[in-house]
Every structure is written in C-alpha cells, then in structure tokens.
Length: 198
Image (cartoon, rainbow, N blue to C red; front, side, top):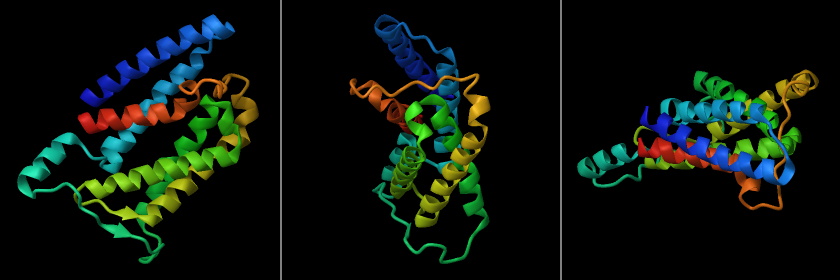
C-alpha cells in the first residue's frame, strides 16, 4: 500500500505540473491521458511488486543480515532450453496491456517499432533487476515472451485504434523538452522507486 500511495502522490504532482505547462504553452487539456496514466502506474506497480518480485529495500536489508550480499545471479541464456513452459505464456499475457496502453497515452507509440523497443528495454530492466533478488532468474525466455506480449498488445490496439482514437487523444512526446520527452520512462522510474522503497 505504501508503494501505491507514494506512486499516486508522485504521479499526481507530475501530472499537475505537466498540465499547468500544457495549458500555459499550448492551451491543451487532455484529462483522459491522466486517467490512463493512473491505470498505467497501477499496472506497473502490480507487475513489479506482485508478479515480478522486483527488488525491495526490506529484502535487501534482510539478505545482507543473513547472507551478507544481495547479488544472487541465476541466469539462463539458452532460449527455450526446457521447452515452452506455462510461465512463458503468463509472460506474454503480462505484457499485452503494455502494448495497448503505450499508444493510447503517447502518439510516438502508434509506431510499432517504438512500442517494441520500449517493451524490450522495460523487460531487460526487469530481468537485470532480478540479479539482485533471491529465488528469481534472469531468463532470456522472459525477455522474448514479454516482448511478444507487447507485440500482441500493440496489434490489438492497431485493430481497434480507429474506434479507440475517437474517444482518446494520445499526447505527443515533446522532443523540445528533455523532461516531457522522457514521460514514459518517468512512469517506470516512479513505479520502480516506489516498489523498491516499499
């Protein structure tokens, strides 16, 4: 609950400041973007905290007191060495919402390559974080299946995009602003930090 409360506070502050800037500079107001954004931060928190087992400071303190270190590599670099497992299908399902949410929030992700690139690097970030958690594996299968899940999500978005875009107006990523152009990464950073601190 602490991670959720902290994330909602941080994302609300960010959204408030961003909206003030948009209204002042562009006379632009898109509330649906923020509503989807709250759903996105909730999705990231559930994924990182409950499903993935993202590192947390409380676990690190416990591990340091018991084992003396936090680095616990369990790496699998052979794709599908044990075949396709049930968990591989779950990884696909877990990343489908990402492929739908990204293009609904930001125009840049209407392009397939940006969505897949973002999903790949988010998955890589998650897999590398698991080097610092006990009983988790950094697995190339997860990287492949997570990216495949985002691909399926993007295809679902693409199929229904004409209908969806009648009701939702994704915002552009303003490349002229270093801060605003990094908004998709800011969501991940907030979710990761809040999960780590919980």
